[in-house]
Image 1 (tube, helix red, strand yellow):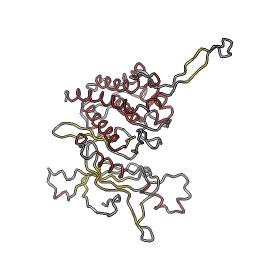
Image 2 (spheres, rainbow, N blue to C red):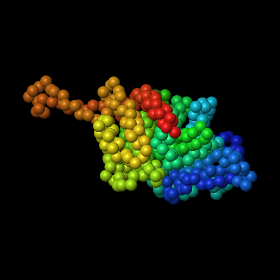
Image 3 (cartoon, rainbow, N blue to C red):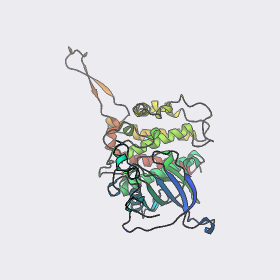
Length: 398
């Protein structure tokens, strides 16, 4: 495997151990992931950790030439690895870049060119396809392999894992100026060692650099629908901040509390009539409206938490945790413009009693999601501090 991010190419051979992600569709990203080792399996000792390497092979959408592509996951992951180097508090919480980038092939003239959908189809065919997104073949080798989130054994373990993930998320934001933008259950892994259980944040396909003010430099809709923030679903301005990813964490915890994370924690009855079912589907604006309604007040939010599976041990603790995080994000602000989730219309008395509108005028309050974005840093700090308290309590139960 060659490193296309280096001016001088080097080649390394890896040996397949197992496939952990299979491409489920012909179209789209066609992501595959392989756990590999540096030596043939027959030569590796059972206790050898040299296989702790993962190769990701995918076809993400790209914006053009490799050198101009700001969404290149290999470059972003390399920045994360360099930016967190020396920060031992995040060790094991993110994959470390080894090598990789865009794959290249030889064209009919013997020239090395990027392996893209445009290259494969040819200019004549490509020019007739209209708005078809350009995809490039990417392959990245990274160290750090975890297990899926479904392998957690309890809610206390879940909270410890989530805390690690968001602690790492904020570390990447601070030291690397990169916002993840796709916090989902698929992008959270579990690691175990002699010290206990840990969380790992992966998949920087949708990550992007932030401005000096902490805003994502682009605001396109990204992520996994049930966990997408309201601003993300509605494609609101200003651009995304860390608060969008914190909002996603609340939705993930609600989702897992309702639907479970494996066969042992799934509900036995029907869940089609639960309020949380409205968080999924094809109509993103309808989903956004539903989330605004549910998140607006603590009383309304109980309509979500009352649907949690009562048969999961410590489910009451999970209810307290998501309600506490929601309160920090939505309620706990001195400025009333920062509180709530709905855009409220105020009725204000007019001075003219002969007014045809009955002596009142109507004024819309600012969108609280937009207003909170300007305060993302202080709110994020309070959310992380709150989650740390929950994680400390969870560790005592393990």
